Length: 125
Image (cartoon, rainbow, N blue to C red; front, side, top):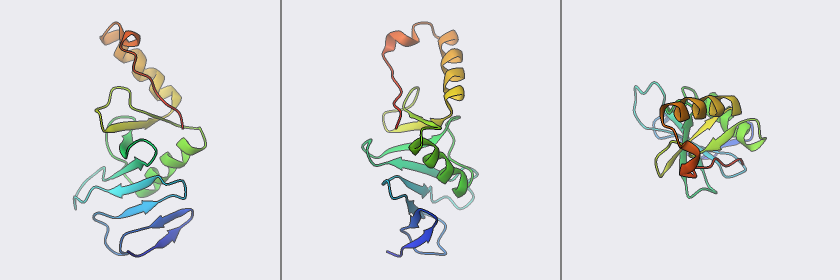
């Protein structure tokens, strides 16, 4: 395992191998490349405090760039963004702004009344 630093992030995978690359923040969050050589949205984040839940963008896609994935995780850590499992599967979540999340809730509740009755809650880190 090779460690290469980029700011606060440390690369855990071998340099030069983009596919399957893994980066780790001092907080324990990781960013991974999905491994597909032509993926348009190849990066996802992993929250170590949430049983390894995978986090993607507010629209359910991976992050388009490594820098965008880093920025999203750092946004969660400082409270500018929200990591939530609302509307996601059992092992996935989304990183979104509070406004994106509010708009999603509004659209979802309009489409399906009774959203709050489901007891689905977001969590902020």
